[in-house]
Image (cartoon, rainbow, N blue to C red; front, top):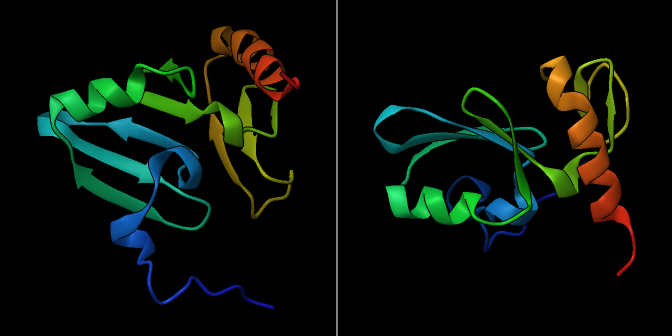
Length: 114
């Protein structure tokens, strides 16, 4: 069974970074590559917009120019970040070993009830 995005919202143009994006990578000249559950979108952003995006606790720098959405991480294991169930078809991202424990702690903190 497939879920359809409503006609009024085009995922490729109207995505909400905080809720739709699993991770993103920044590139040169303001080009940002956003990765969702089943799509990748490249979009130009101003330096102010990128700074604003990185100012909160939701996105965690995992190395180089890559940031993961802590709210979307389901598990961190063996230098791999999982988004959703741990299946071969699930979106996942390799991260450096030295970032693994700090990301695990951050995910656990974010999942605790307030």
